Length: 425
Image (tube, rainbow, N blue to C red; front, side):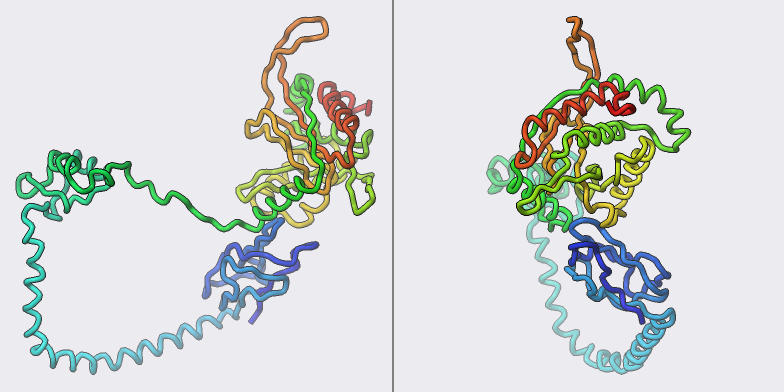
């Protein structure tokens, strides 16, 4: 017999919710096979079987709140489940033996029981006493069915005048005009309950807590700018095929913005800092969180040491983390830390937004949809260019307005002239 227990869930995480059991009691379990899924306020965790056998007990059903080390269930040996099954069959066989004895007394009182049963026919004859009502075995004509369904009527309550007691459309209209349901039943068809209550998941509750914490704690402000995406798009179109062929990953926009943000963070370290007590902590490393939307909620996996990674390495890591997020495979390590965050609402069509800080970080960059807009050039000519609005939300307790605006200008400059990223200009 092997116990299934709640594993260590990560730093500062001590509780979880049993989200889903992949096996039922009696099911065979293979070594290292996922048995149950736990949901914490950061990630979902699959608990795997430490031995092969049969799931013999579920101690914590779905929805249970459990702590680290708590018992979830037990796995018995391969033959452990078969023995109880055979024992369970024996009582059934024994119970079948007295059955003939039970039949004998039933046969004896049968003649006596036959006397009172004739009283039943009068009750069965009651439906025939209402000849004006529609017989239950007659189908409704389509027009009649449409009216009955639309107004939520019971056809058995409507007097029928058709042949053989059939309900006609005229019968329904007369009933609606003068019947008791005239005011209350003339409504649209029932569309189910008006409300549905669903318990919040741990992840959703944690998201709500952190977002509200950011609003209550930080002095948040947002500054805006716009970037002409022409140069980045031209560079991407020129090299995307050779880039993917060489590195096995597509060239996206996120690597350009990650590199541009790191360059700006180096110049303006306050945007890469956080408050701890009465101290400002400036980070000399650049771990960039990338917000990913999943069916379970928003998560922010972290790309470590972005300043040391190539464009291809950044794209590959973002792609891998995004897939893990959508599959619910992120680990605590994937989510821990981060000195700055980028969120791209443009993939959903967002034109402009004010992103909320990912506390305790002091800055978050919001990317948005790319749209062709009329742009006035320095020579006065008007041209159409692909423009993206950028938003930087920042903690005004740490970052001054000058620093925030300068940061966003540096990002804009790097995106509009990507060669700056190569020579660090």
